[in-house]
Image 1: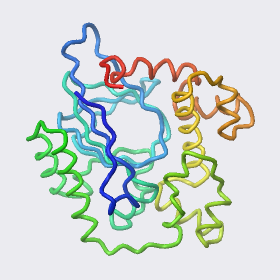
Image 2: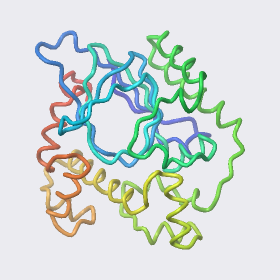
Image 3: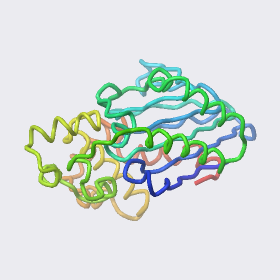
Length: 276
């Protein structure tokens, strides 16, 4: 089993943030298999599930989706509970902001906002062939190599048209620190209206909403790293006016209060299996 984050090839780093490789096997666990709460994250991704389909359910139990074996996941706006089979594998390519837009040949990612789309419907049979290669190997490093070769090959075929908005001085890395909409507009050399339109094409949602999700992610990651910090200190460190302001974002993007989300993550499969 494994839970691993890997950096991409240098040629891909302007567009791809990381690869996440996960393998859970619940055979040794007694009782009901744990579900995994996945909160909204400021990211878009291409995901392969070599172990096959699984089910995800909305927190209010009103939506139940069977997830295909390969998906394009746009910017999600709420949380879901993932219910995994006994043996579960996933290879996830997390793109830099705007990276999926370019990798898809500048197809507006508004089509994928708050949605999970079968990748084969968008990319064709090539996706199925990559999935078969991932299913045919048990070697984790080979899974990453297969995925990266697929990404590189597709990028080499594209005629990339990079604009100033795509060169925001390490925008992906800046998501870990304070960043304002004014900063981004200034660096993009665009008017506010032009920037908002182009940003939405690249990231699926408005820049204001994207930055809210990024700040929520940053606050929760800070608490996970520095467990002795109280929640008010976390809120103020991440630019919230007060604790209740932060709670509002947690409820919108995770469906839980900050302490409840922390407790839910402590029961995550990777924790119970000793992988993190």
